[in-house]
Image (tube, rainbow, N blue to C red):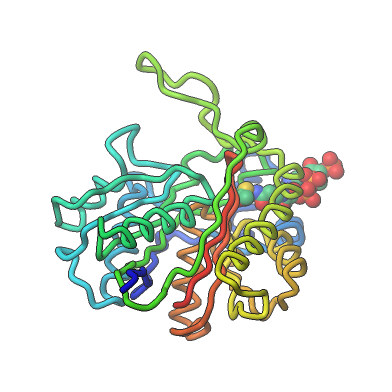
Length: 325
Ligand code: ACO
């Protein structure tokens, strides 16, 4: 009998400090940076975001999200046999955030590693975990997206610092006789490195280059809409499905306008799109599992429904996963 993977529980965690646009506008004004609630809402759909306190890392947020996903799945942490963390804001250069998180869950022994695909990280990580479950390398995986993007924001650059937030989302992915994950379509094109990056690196005990996020917003926007449509269509074709089979689109939460354009191209009404960017901002690799868990807990997305998860981010990377919850 063919072996599949299936999500059996979702969880998420947001750090308690919540800043509305008004809070952020006031903080930025105190530093001489001018922006407004109107501009942020109109161009992005964002109304609030959460920022982690100093000393709180991606592994802390990810561990809390993982505990919530384990509880939802009814799985004991000691039975987990694979942990993959998607993050672009790791706790350390090494070891992996997944190793630190594993210890925070009080377990040891299973393989753990990070995936670095920026905002596409969660769909990449889910695809890898699915492959490992299908081939019998794992049976009960934790797949986590966790970020503290506030650490890499340039709060003097109003074109980027208003867009991002911190948070984590997680799923428990288990081996199953019935599908689960139906198809996946992943891509990258490294020629676009410069339009969205944190160019600094550590060398000789110093940070060389700029360790803060740089983005050409309009270039990102144009690329994002096209590749998200292509990836979603490719994932549908691989599974022998059409747009009509999608109950919910769970896109990377970067910007409401990107989501609206993608939904329109896929002929999906916005009532079938899970939107949390208004409350979370862009949490990069955490945004898709955070949105998924919010929708599950709100009773919006239900077991048995067909979901299209899709992400796009620095690299450029992009991809989609079609699944039955
Ligand atoms: N407050 C007020 N004014 C601002 C702000 C701000 N925070 N930021 C920029 N502006 C001004 C600019 O200076 C510019 O002023 P000017 O016309 O006097 O020069 C004006 O607003 C328009 O700027 P644009 O950059 O043209 O604004 P645009 O409509 O393109 O919106 C945005 C910018 C929201 C970044 C948009 O390009 C976008 O959504 N891009 C997609 C990028 C994205 O979402 N990235 C997230 C990370 S990538 C990912 O996750 C896939």
